[in-house]
Image 1 (tube, rainbow, N blue to C red):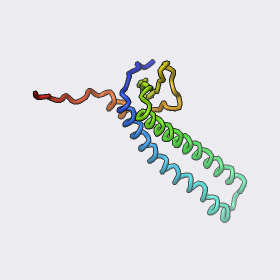
Image 2 (cartoon, one colour; image 1 turned 180 degrees about the horizontal axis):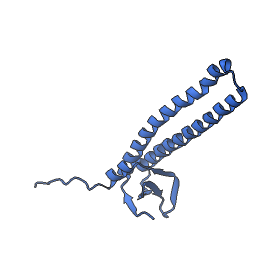
Image 3 (cartoon, helix red, strand yellow; image 1 turned 90 degrees about the vertical axis):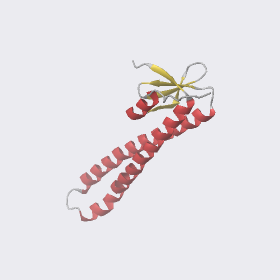
Length: 138
């Protein structure tokens, strides 16, 4: 099992914002792909010479698969946005990094699944980087 590292709420809010932004880009691409699959039957069914039932089944399958992928991305973006809001407003929560998963814990150390989200490896490396040293002159 991966080690668990406590994170400050400010870092979690920034990570959640970046995760949501990257997810929104993926979501835009998937909406475009879904649109193509939804419009393609109109163009294909009129001129297709083969078995139209088989064509409809194949297109329906791919519409379902792409729709499920879109739904998963949408839920990830929604969860990251909820975590961002909670990190900024709910000081009672503590945040822990387990591998690539940021987990919210309440006062009794019970994980709040709806506020937990996965981050990229790059974002994990940024969160774990040693902060820049600053010279303080008196």
